[in-house]
Amino acid sequence: MKPQKIDHVCIAVRDLDEARIRWEKILGKGPDDEYVDEPEQIRVARYMVGEVGLELMESTSPDGPVARHLDRHGEGVMVLSLGVESTAAAVDELTAEGFPFVPAPETGEVLRPFRGGRFAFVHPKAVNGVLLELIDDGTGD
Amino acid sequence: MKPQKIDHVCIAVRDLDEARIRWEKILGKGPDDEYVDEPEQIRVARYMVGEVGLELMESTSPDGPVARHLDRHGEGVMVLSLGVESTAAAVDELTAEGFPFVPAPETGEVLRPFRGGRFAFVHPKAVNGVLLELIDDGTGD
Picture 1 (tube, rainbow over the protein chains, first blue to last red):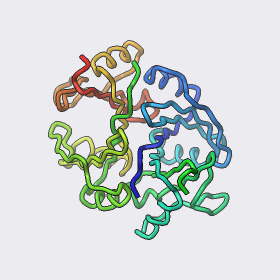
Picture 2: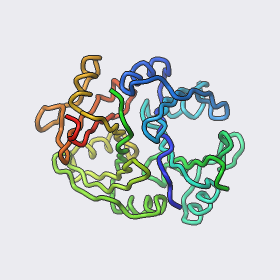
Picture 3: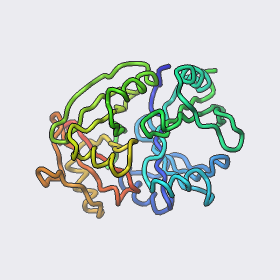
Picture 4: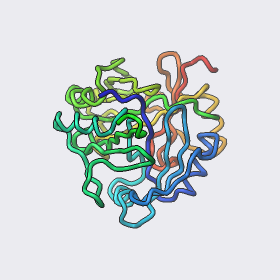
């Protein structure tokens, strides 16, 4: 595999509206995208910085994955996401190399759907504490 | 200000040689750059992923900033760096907006030199726990 780019970086925040005020002064603009991802229990503001999406991410529930991350680690960078041609192929290749993946709590599946593509998380214990995502746009399978 | 791109993302690791083995399987290549930054007390392997440098970073001393970060937070993403036209101008603009910066321990200066350019760190307390770097290549001042 060969990731084509860093697709996005997610920053876990406690209060998205308050975080937006700070980051928009630094980024010099409002969000390029805003969405709620119900399976992941997150509300997101995304800002394109060059080819990378910088995402501010708030939990929509007190016990979602972002809420639990905030309880354990506090605010900060939570996810680093690499854009790949095919998430399924990348998961197969890295699984064969011994990398563990994090199954989705609801489905137990490693591959998770998002807007026509799929993503998966390499377990942080295998990649130096980083919650490393692989994501495709659904055109490469 | 308007950052042009994410310049690099730094991952703090305890053992660079061991981390390289894992990450090079994921990135599908060896480093595009390797260097030691003595003032920062770090040894770095940098991999270009699209336009962004993904850096694995090990401390060269037991009490350098990366060693202290590892003691407090463990391994993981430590720095998010935004490429700007002029670090000095960005620092002036954000200081006027009330953002605090982290002075370099050795010099007490906010602006730090690197390869003809300069960089500076916004204090994590002002940006949701992110150690946010601004960096230029020295051509914009």
